[in-house]
Each structure stands twice: as structure tokens, then as C-alpha cells.
Length: 635
Figure (tube, one colour):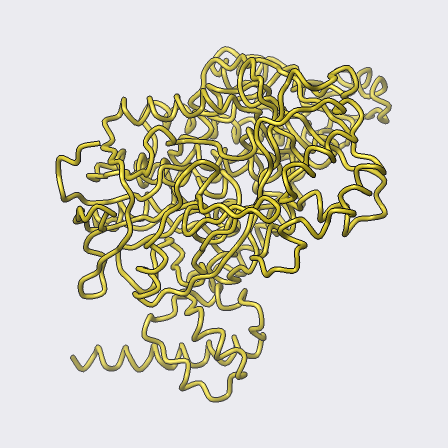
């Protein structure tokens, strides 16, 4: 693609999920952005699992949406199947997930980028330049130099990517796609520390070669919910996925050929994702399991190519095929593409601020797998945050800083910058101590103020969500104040197996009973909501019910958050000298010097930091503050 200018405000390197979010939100905020991709036809490509959302990931997609992100909106337009996971558990961990037509998703993303007028350059960035500690330009492999005020690197698995299929090694960023060379070396020369990680993807097989009658069909929800608040009409297809099971023969064949797997060959390999193990790991490490489930998922509408979820592997291609052919229903299976493992460079995320700007170079941001994460949703979340903060820096506006109690995105960033990572990071509900408050159903309530303050949403959607959140709270107030008589409710209570009441009781008190639902009180004030909020009627009632049912637990968490708030807001000066604190533990000093936390709250969460270290730090901070005050008075 012809490059018609050599200067802009912001360069976003990489056209994956992180890059798309970063470039689009910065463009929306009025920044002059150029998105750079090695292959513009691959922008928005879903290189692995054809799904968006899932456990904790679905919550992040809803958060992205409220903060001006596009992943959920694109996914809704390409959904093959939609369902909510974890319905048998508490509402805090209910997670939306959509099976996606990956070809349509690419097209939707690329069409949107074109429609908003975002500038896209095709080419390979190989070098980042800085002047006076601030990013100044990026250099392409053909020597072209693009000057900028800020840069966001979202390089995915492309940094010196190396694919493994048995003993075969292929230099690539994805199968049949060129890897990126030069960026790692450039950043290392600027003082950044890099590491090596590994991930993998399963084989793709011919649909016609599967005996589908053997598999157990799995369908989506009868009343599916859109991932995005921007989606008005959501009537997705409901294409089934099919479950098959490995067996003793499969496991024996895998164990027999274990030494041929790149991961078990004895050669040193980077660390892979613990929570998304290869089939080799499953069979070897969990030998007590007689079988493992394989989910066969369509990759697009009428797809002849099927994704074998659960069979990530780096075994030789012929061994992969033989192993799959031991599975009932897959005896005649044929490959379209083998599974493979891929190693790639990443940069330790402790080198970042909470904004995802690097501590070493002003205006340089990292987002996505370059920070050691795994997954589309984690990448998109980082891309959006980096894009907002890069734009705010350029526009001299306040940054977006999300706390752990604000969003899963806040948990993600906090974990990355404080705990670093020696394996691909993946988000789970268990990582969030305040997950009871971080529900998919209340993302708008939690984050809408941020969107208002930073102008992240179109005015019409902002107003719509504002009215919705206010109505939800007014419903809660109504339910907490309104009494209901025995005559009105006892018959319903008895039908639910609940004890009846003898005098008028607040509706909210009855709602706290497990079997009682809000629809049992379908009084006129609740019925009328449907007229004013036809699109969000069910969401309003569901969320109001949730707030009441979990009110006690939620309030306890809020009290805990309020107690810790003082430490979260207590800033540590950038030039604070930890070496002067002689009474602090050696480990504590080393950790503080290495990670340079921005707040006392962050310092508390660093692994290895003791409570006594924090107490001593607070004493020195107060002393330092008083000294600076006196100095300021003299001047």
C-alpha cells in the first residue's frame, strides 16, 4: 500500500485484536493514527479458536464495549452460536461466549476500519527510534521512516516466531505468514528485557471426513444475548458444536510417540500456557483420566474446515492424524492443516506503567501478546487501554486507570505490571478477588462514568446506557421500599415451596429467598418498564434482582474496597529512592526497585513484599512529603 505521508500522532504496529482496538479508539478520540500491518488482508484474523468470550473473557468483552471497544460489536455480526457459560454457578461467574464465523469477523473488522477512514499502511516495522527518552519514529524493513509522537506495539506471536511440528521448524508468525524480525533486537538495544513464550493451536480437519452421528451435539441459548450494547437486533444462527472423546488407544499412541513431540523431545522450549495444555500434557500429566473431550467447532458458515478444540499439539503431522483416527467417529478423518506449537518473543510487562506505557521510553506502549498474555479478549482489552492512554497523552488529557475493583481489565493490567509473567497469562474469574462485583451484567454500571469523562462512546449510546443504569437503580429502590401483602404473594410462595407470610413484607426481603424471582412480583411499576426500555427490559430486571439477592456480600466487598482506597490513591514519587530505606527487607527493596510501583496499593500487592515493608515505606513517604512541603514554602 502506498504510504502518502511520513508523519502522524500515533503509529499502531500490528493489525490483530489489540491493534484494531488501539487504532480505532485513538482515531475516535481525534488523534491522527496510522495502523501498520504486515498483511492488510489479515487484519482482524482469528488465528486460533473461532470464539469470542468465555469464562472471565466474556466479562472483559462487555467491559470493552462500555469503554468504546469494538470486539463485541464485530462478534455479534458474525455469531454462529451464542450461550452463557457457568449457569449452574453463582451469577458473578456467568460468562457470555459466542462461536464466530471467523471469515465474516475479518470482513466486518476491515469494512469498519475503512468506513471510519482510519489510515492503514502495509509493511514490516523493524526498528523503534527515540530522542531524549521519547519515541520519535518507527522504521520499516524497506527503510521508510514514519515519524510520530507515540507508538503502540501489538505484535502478537510474530516477534521471531518459530513454529514446531514434530522435529520440523518453520520461521513464521502464523502458519504460512511471515514472522517479524528486528523489533525485539531494536527494543533490547533500548534497554528492554525480553523473554520467550510458547502457545499452540490444534489441527483443522475436513468436515466430510467425520462421522457426526457419533458426536454429542451442543447448541446455544434459546434466548441468546448480544455481547455488545451497540447491537439492536440479535438473532444469530445456532450452529451446533459436537463433542467427541479420546480413549485408551489414543492415549497409548500419544505416549508411545511422546519423544517426537517438540515439547517432549528433550530440546529446550519456551514455557506454554498452563491452563490451555496440549493433548500431550493432558495425557502425560493427567494419566488418571480415561478420556478427554474434543469439541469439533465450525470456523465459518457452511465451513468445510473444522477446529478440533482440545487437541492442541506439536506432534509430527502423521502422528497427529493417527491419534485422531483412534477416536470413535474420527476413524476416517482427513487433515486440512496440522496442529503446531509456536515460540515467540515477549517483553516482561513489569516494564510498563498502569497505562501500558513503557517506563523506559515516553510515548511507547505495549499491548497484547507482546506483554506475555494469551487470548483475543486479553489482547483487545490491552489494545483499547493503550489506545485510550496514548491518545490522552497526545491530547494532554487524563489517563484511564482501571482498578481491580473496577473491571477484569483492571485485574489484568495490575497482575501484569506487578507480578510479571513466566508463562502466557490468561484471565480467569478466580484471579479477581472482587468478582462478585465484576459481573457481565453490570459492566455499564461499573464503567459508564469513565466513558462519560473521556468521551469514549457515541452520545446516543451513552444516553441510552445512562438511562438504563439509572432505571436499574430506581427499580432496586422501589423493591426495597415497596411492601407486598400476604394476599398478593402467598399463593405464589407456596407454589415455589417457600413459607408464606402473615403480614406485609418488603419485596426485597422476599427476593432474597433462593426460589423467589423478580417476575413473581410483576406489578404495574415493573410492567411499565417494558414500554420505556424494550431492548433492555430483561437486563434491568435481572440486574436489579441480582443487586438485591447479593446485596449483603456486595456491600461487604464495598466496605473492604473503601478501606483500601487510601492506599490505592497514595502516589509514590517517580524519583523516590528506595535505597535510603535501610530498615526494609532486602527482598522488599529489590522488588520495589525492580517494579517501581506507582501507588502504595500496588506496592502492597507485589509478591514478596511484607506488611512491615509497607509500614516502613509509609513512614518514609510521609517524611519525604513533609520535606518537599517545607522546600516548597521556602521557594
